[in-house]
Length: 211
Ligand code: B12
Image (tube, rainbow, N blue to C red; front, top):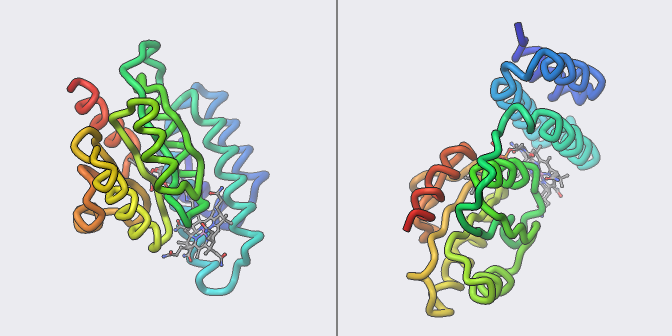
C-alpha cells in the first residue's frame, strides 16, 4: 500500500531519490493512488515552505523542491487525468503579476486540458494588459488566475478591474485559485468563482463553457 506519510516526509526532506523511487513504483503498479500521492507531495511542499519561513531552508531549497514537484507531476499525469479527446472551448490560464510560482498552475493546466479545454497559458508574472488584450484578441470568455503569494490577491483584483476598465467584464468568467484562496478572498478580488482543487476548477469552467 502507498505510504503517504513517507512520501510527505521524503518531499519535505528534499529526498529526490526516494520521491522518484516511490512514484516510479506506484506508476509501475498501474498508477493506483496517484491522487493520494499528489496530495502527499503537496503536503510535503507545504512543510518545505514552513521550513523556509523558519529559516531552516533557503531559496535554493525552494527552487529544488519546485523542480522535484514538477517532475513528480509529469510522472503522475497519465494516472491523474484522462483525456476527453474533444475540445469544449478555449481558456486563458496564468499566474498573476508579481508571482513566479507555476507548479500549481501547471497542474491546473493538465486538468483543464484533460477536461477538454484548449489552454492559452500566459505563464507567470503576467501583466493585466497581456491578459485583457489576449482575451479580446482571441475572443476568450474563460480566464483562470493562479497565485500563491499574498500579494497575488491584489494582482488578481487588478486583473479583474482590468476587464472592468476595458468594458468587457460581463463578457468573461473569471476563476481564481491558489493555496490561500477562499470565498472571502474570491469576493475581494471580484472574481466569479474560486477553487482549490483543480478538478473543481475544471467542473466550474465546464459549466461556463456550456453557456
Ligand atoms: C516551490 C516554491 C517556490 C519556488 C517556485 C518554483 C515554481 N516553479 O513554481 C521559487 C523558488 C521560485 C519560490 C520563490 C519565492 N517564494 Co515560494 N514557495 C514555494 C513552495 C515551497 C511550494 C509552492 C508549490 O509549488 N506548491 C505545490 C503546488 C502543487 O501547490 P499550489 O501552488 O498551492 O497549487 C495547488 C492549488 O493551490 C491549486 N491551484 C493553484 N493555482 C490554481 C488556479 C486555479 C484556477 C485553480 C482552480 C486551482 C489552483 O491547484 C494546485 C494543485 O493542487 C511554497 C510553500 C507553500 N506553502 O505553498 C513557497 C511560498 C509560496 N513561497 C513564499 C515566498 C515568500 C517566496 C519568495 C518571496 C522567497 C524570496 N524571498 O524570494 C519568492 C517569490 C518569488 C515570486 N515573485 O513569486 C511563501 C509565500 C508567503 C506569502 N504569504 O506570500 C511560501 C508560502 C513559503 C513560506 N511559507 O514562506 N518559491
